[in-house]
Amino acid sequence: MEHYERLDKIGEGASGVVYKARDRRTGATVAVKRLRGAGFGDHDGSRLSEDLLREAACLEACRGHPSVVELRAAHRDGEAAFLVMEYVGPSVAQVMRERGRPFPEADARRLMRQLLDGARAMHDLGVLHRDLKPDNVLVDAHGDLKICDFGMSRFAAATAPPYTSPVVTLWYRAPELLLGSTEYDDRVDTWALGCIMAELLAGAPLLPGRSEMDQLNRAFDTVGTDDMTDWPGFCRLPRAGSPLCQRSRPPSRLREMFPSLSAAGLDVLSGLLACRPDRRLTAADALRRPWFTDAESADVDQPRSACGGRFTARVGGVADAIVV
Ligand SMILES: Nc1ncnc2c1ncn2[C@@H]1O[C@H](COP(=O)(O)OP(=O)(O)OP(=O)(O)O)[C@@H](O)[C@H]1O
Image 1 (cartoon, rainbow, N blue to C red):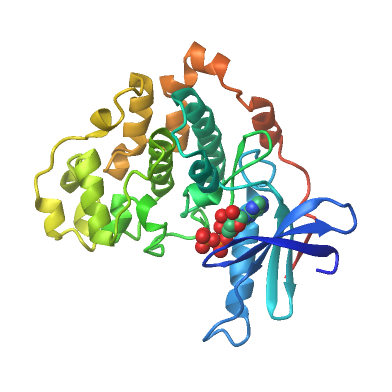
Image 2 (image 1 turned 90 degrees about the vertical axis):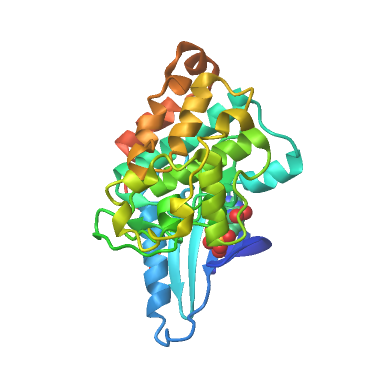
């Protein structure tokens, strides 16, 4: 890590501390995430190596997509493990806090197009992010978004269920996860994207629950249960017997909560926030809805399709150095 001069601390979370740094060889500003040190029961540091490899592998798979933060290097250095990434900018959470007011619909649509395009690409590659939230979406100098923090990610294609539960920060956690599902799919990410879309449009979190059951109650009260109990996977959910699932609920309140949102915007929001996972939009489905495809939105938004094409061709080679 001698190539990097550490500058300010820019973030800290459950999995590590993130610093702004300067690459002494190129002068480029980068972000260096130091993963948390080996803990109890990890005397040989094997968990740290595993965490580093998993996060690096998911980032590397998505490398070259304009909506995913770019991995530059990964290092295991004695007791410590580091991920070196392009430096992007503040998180959407920080930007929203400073802005203090909602985004207009056209801006929200442009941002959601970028996020859904990044999610579609990662899901096509078999990567589940599993922790999408405004803190894990960064805003670059052009106002474009990049998804970061793949610390909870997994290659779904490489491992069959059961998957770990719980994943995803509480306020963005899908109903099936709150009900204990271990057989979930990429639609846990699209639920989280629905919560982010609502937050961009409202300027405040949609479902700020205080506990898992409070979170589920808020989700059911806001979007309705969508006949959740008829979902074929429902009876396998560990918490299927919860009284919260038996209570009758009013239909979705999203229209009433977002009175000025266009019908096409509400169609995407309700589709991402469908309670039943089998009725929820995937990222690819969402991008095919009229909100994104009609002539007006296609003309007005900046579709980063040139970059999307570049991603299809994939950036050649691997990151600078993956040393574990
Ligand atoms: N490439 C980057 N460029 C700029 N800032 C970044 C970058 N990567 C991370 N950050 C900042 O650091 C914060 C923490 O990073 P990250 O989410 O990867 O760590 P974490 O320990 O997994 O956090 P959490 O537990 O909250 O999910 C981010 O919210 C963001 O503000």
